[in-house]
Image (cartoon, rainbow, N blue to C red):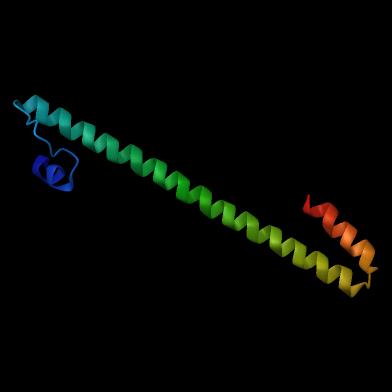
Length: 88
């Protein structure tokens, strides 16, 4: 396991663990670092997906608004004002 982490670049250096306790500490620190990095990467990915979904819902609502305004033949000036107001 220690060799595997060293090959991945997480523990490869000129400094070599001298005791078994140092090897265990190095492995533990590497695994903890990977777990923390994975957590942050997952959080960023999840938030990005949520943001994309929210933007799509926003666009869908404006499509519905434009369809409504067109269907009921609302005056162009009023339609523009309503749309501009809601975009803020």
